[in-house]
Image (cartoon, rainbow, N blue to C red; front, side, top):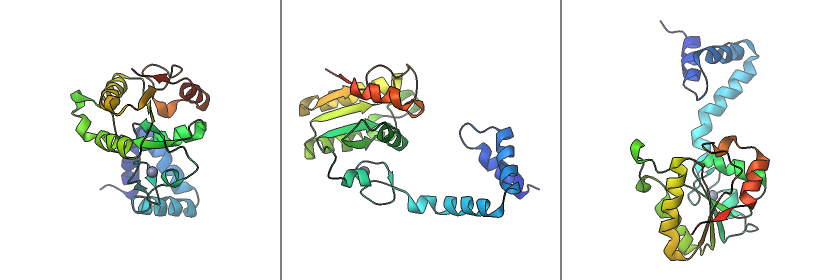
Length: 197
Ligand SMILES: [Zn+2]
């Protein structure tokens, strides 16, 4: 019969980057450290999905809808930074280089994996650009085949709106992930963004 400890190890092993061995280390660590930690961890996980929601405007994770960034009147409302996933917002916020607001796509176009433009928040992006009178869209997408495909698709869709569309400049490693980029590299890439034509 599977013990509680076995279950915990199996659950941890499902997390990205955690193998069976690390899962075991984590589970034993939690068991052997003080009880309060395990309790706090459990309580936080328990209410995670109820407390944290997606912002109905930009799609980032938030506890109040619309999120603080969307509500912040001091931000430049003419600029939108488009990212693949909600956690990319945090990375760009930490670079402190971007004064505008965000738009989360929820993935990248990848026909081989069955992910088409309609599966992503691209329609919502076009709507925002038109309705919110956005004058500049910055595509902060990973420099991968999927990132390039998505950027090109969005650029074409936005062409008729007359909005300026740019992508992050070099400095980002080819095939790399935004999430793992250090702050300085990201700051440089934002500053040196290239306008797409
Ligand atoms: Zn928002």
